[in-house]
Image 1 (cartoon, rainbow, N blue to C red):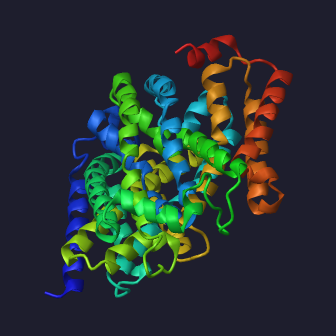
Image 2 (image 1 turned 180 degrees about the vertical axis):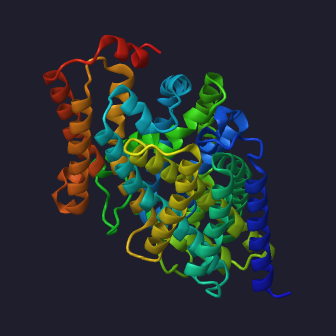
Amino acid sequence: MDKFTLITLVIAAYLAATLAVGLLAGRRASKSVQGYVAGDRDFGLVVMYFITGASVFSAFAFLGGPGWAYSRGAAAFYILSYGVLGMAPWYTVGPKVAALGRRFGFVTQAQLLTGRFPSRGLSALMAALTLAAFVPYVTIQIRGAGIVIEAVTDGRIPLWAGAAVAYGVVMVYVLARGVSAVGWTNAFQGIFMLAIAWTLGLYLPSKLYGGVGPMFEQILSERPELLSFPGLDGAGAPWTWGAYSTAILVSAIGFTMLPHLFMKAFTAKDDRTIRRTVVLFPTFQLFLIPVFLIGFAGVLFPEAPPSADVVLPFLVVRTELPALVVGLFCAGALSASMSTGDALLHAGASVVVEDGVQPFRKLSDKAQRLLMRFLVVGVGALAYALALEENASLVDLLLASYGIVCQFMPAVLAALYWRRATTAGVLWGLVAGASTAVFFFLNPALKPFGVHEGILGLLVHLPVLAIASLAGKPQDAGHVEKFVDV
């Protein structure tokens, strides 16, 4: 059996196993919207741990992370920081969100906000911004799957075909089983990608340099700029501290507010499960260490990859690993991509229906689920089309997505903790913050000190929210107490 055939068979076996797990999951879940979107609020610790970790560590971490370590050095370490910082608020916020979900039947972020701040316009705006943030995020996952399959098959399966097959599998189990399929496939994929990442992360530095220590000694001798904080920017010049620190800050805030992660609080069995997940989550951050080691292993490699984002599959192919190992690596990388892509597709469709359609036109339970399935296909198709473009790095796409998502933080905190906040204040703050972030994203040369556009948006968002709220009539005290005194 030739190498290409064996690699293809390993990939096919992994995809078949993932599909089987996805289709078997959730057979006992109810056929209601609550069952499809929130898993009947019955996820335990194991599924919560993996659905949180695996849905966050995606193709961006498996490909973009090593790509940044390879091309920008210490700049990649910002990724290690923000995950822990972004998860920490959920120890307090998560149980409160879950309690409100159980009390009022909320299954999305916008439902919680419009429960406190009644406004169909706010609901539609949240749906639109969530979709705008999710499309580039799903694009990362689909493009990542295609990159890996194309690389390990030496171009015999092109990017467009590999991405289509991988995400065809995702579509089937998300359409069939909803969040239950997302949860259990994430557990399967999370275990798989952790094992592959650590194996390759320790093997490649050992094979190429004689170990991790000798590898960094050689890099320090020949490319010391890569090991100096805060690393390099996209043009190879030193990254500014303003850009580095605000990349951490915007990512941490965006991480906390990721709609697909936020929605998982509504799926938890109880508050204890949420708090244990938060405490255990930093162990999932260890996944980043081996993938960074792989990126650094490529720095002094005699050949250069076509682009930084493909350094990991490039090294796997060029170091003449056995075909079985290459196939297993590909399966691990697909795990990273698919475990996030499925959560995003499911959450994006759910948000559009629940927040963008339902407030304006009430649909039956059956009609909601049907429309969600159509939207899973629609969002996937749009992201697939964008994934075939090659203009932006995977990490840059993620940072752009976080710039929008972090604008949700002031509104959520106001809903949960600030009695004086009003609907007008939250709505105008969100419009002002999102508009500012988009403006500076489109005009990066105008950003002062390299500060991320998401942070610039928050600097406008917060005072607008506060001033507009204080200038208006306070909300009814009894209504406010239902949300603040939980």
